[in-house]
Length: 124
Image (cartoon, rainbow, N blue to C red; front, side, top):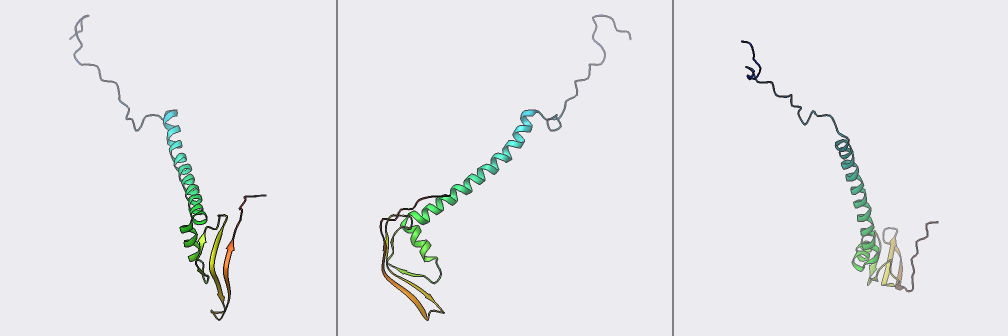
């Protein structure tokens, strides 16, 4: 059957081929984001690690509970009546005992105290 002008064709035209979004060519924005997300994750984890370490050190050295916990962790050191912080200006202990040679010998310091201590950071 011959087509005449103005009459519709027998078969409709085929729809344009669709490209799957997964197979679409990479765009600069998509490529940049795919590289930026892992980089930001690594930087965030490193920052969290540094801040966590700094916070932990501050707790250990600048608070009484932290200092007390730290001093209890020292092996073979017996400390009684400790008050203050190691990073603070004053601290004192009723007694400090350092045994050695299987506990048969030791050094005993009573009335140990430090006042007016100033800690300064001098990297050079």
